[in-house]
Length: 326
Image (cartoon, rainbow, N blue to C red; front, side, top):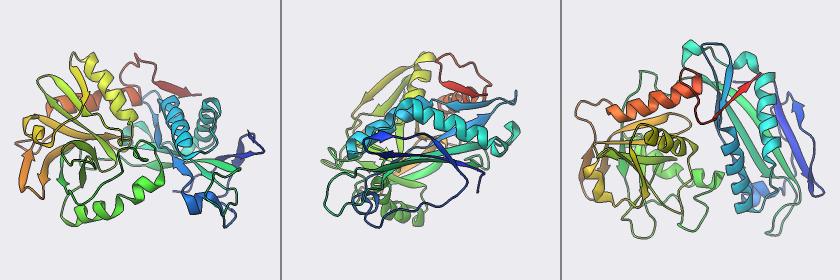
């Protein structure tokens, strides 16, 4: 949905300029810009929520700022200061406040910051000019019919990224690399692809573009891998799991261990948690089922409600994750 304003900032002559407000949805750039030819580009995604008290809250924006800095270092782009990133978010939310959905809707204002090389460069090397843009748009609740489970499929013919490659950065190329596998999974009736590690095809990596977690023996288990994008939602859920008295393990998870989990889920900004109904191993003809009645497990539901409650202001923010836009 078109909103009123977006925020822009340019990097030239070795320095970032001031934030500028624009009402245009268009970007003009040189046809030899490095973002087009060499993939010098990264993006982030976060949300602003209107609470029952009508206050607008943004969740952990400093973590998104740090992750964008990591992506910049991984692609040799100019690094945007955290303060400028946060200032752009607050300014964009304030200017587009009328688009923040009401509390009762369960919807939110999605915030999309992105950074790309605009300098004209035919040789393969970093640009000397960059542009940062941040726009917002309202998005509806992820689960239209309430919190529910979906099936995933393991297909070994696809890798999302190489172990020492770009998987840990939030860059567009990783998403382009997932389109063929994702579309095939959708055509087969699954919500997304469940990726294994690219070297041995033995260990769990990611669920589509989301992080995986499994629950067993009062323990929250999530994969450790150099090719996984570090999810801010997953990072938050690990803290909340510990708050609930659970153990947290971040380690390699062999695919066979899926059979031992009582609950499993994919987590990320869009859904917070997408509970997994089952994971079908397409090549091995095995199904790992995580629910008997098709409903989310009790711990997944508790974690989901707790995190959503913090985001909307219904639960106390004991970890300092929320910024109130005033």
